Length: 319
Length: 314
Image (tube, rainbow over all chains, first blue to last red; front, side):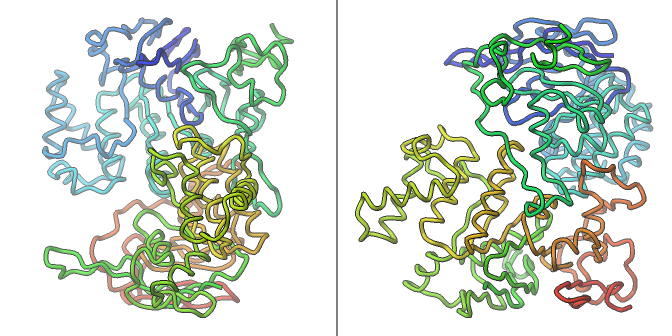
């Protein structure tokens, strides 16, 4: 189980601090696949990365993260090493470029395991089963990355990242560079990995909400560095409460929807720059429901069991 | 009307150019005036190559492309310039379509100098404003700015407005919204729909089937340079006939239902190099002996073409 409490992470730049993640608090249950969605620059990747590698120019401003009750030394690059790959692992964006091009894949895997002082023999047997799970032939271990297609490399990195059965797996935009068929295959494999206990909880970062509807147990929506809403997948898609989530979901074109029958609309305005973000709720300027109260930052609180939202319109009656 | 008649693009590859790569293989379809046709395919299917051939950015190896009966491939010099008055393209990455050193509206000045040097500056400024308004932009907010000061959606609309200044008949829109955020992409899509009402024809190149379904009357499904299926969008999405189309439609993530576990997704890598028979056979669950020959494109019902032995031999 993962508990994130008031996590705040900024980027240090020459112009000042970019406030990319502000006061994030949420929990992730055992075995939960949580989708983390939002537009470009909403801080979803920042949140994912700060859980595993909070490196400069990222600065840890405040808050803490507990994994199974134990606090993670987020700000300490060295101490975090003990957790990386073993307890917390990541499938990076552009995973197809994450393999060492001058090593055979099997050799690279072995080196990786040695560096982590893992039992190479025991894991190698497991590795063969895992390759079967993602439908890769055993021969890939004797191949160089260049011999594999993009989708195959992506699956190979999935196997590598989860080899030591991490408690928390962060999947960063792993489907966005693939075509629809591979997208579905990779997403379904990830669920299978969770079901087979190759990893415990998963944070699935993506901008594609319709993929999350297929595989995620819960969805967390972010906007401009703040958490907007978290609830079960069904609730977020069918009955969202935060105005941003509502507008975002109504802007998605779906199969069966044609502009001649039903014209969808986008959200007017654009996301604020986070170097000098507006005070209060950052969605205020684009929000059709905004009122005076929105000049204060709305708290991210539970409005219904398991349903969290940060909006004065929703929390006003509960607070 | 823009008509592609048995168009192929072959690249010479290998050290001495001894091998051939069929990027586009014998593709035919028509785009009637005032219609949007979606060209759908995964990466490497040749969809952008077709767009580039229409724009004359690369040559055509075999076959002909005709605009209102005029062979596009044979245009030269001033004829070609006249062609670009009518046909323009907008591409995927709006940020690399601009020179970051100059203000974004320089693209309008270039159009003025090249195509309308006789129009005086005042009249031209009015035209630019009108085009921007047609593109859904407020001229006061977007003129005299550098590309980095504008959002991706604004830059894409700028490029569409630039095309509108030329009074174009045909627009090649190559993945123009795949780099935009969900909250803004739908506005650009709606803009295309509005332009269509003014008689503009659009070739909408995409890998996203739900976008294609939203905007287009007709769809062409490409696989490795060959047409798998083409016809009326609704027909193709509701009753796909080609196994590849069926697999694609079953893989699209939807918000109204979960993935159907009945239809399996085959992720086998397609063989490299030239294929003599059906290009999809290596991945196709229904492949049989006959598929060693290339299936012809057959009309199964009015306006609905499929290239698959299983469908057409019945």
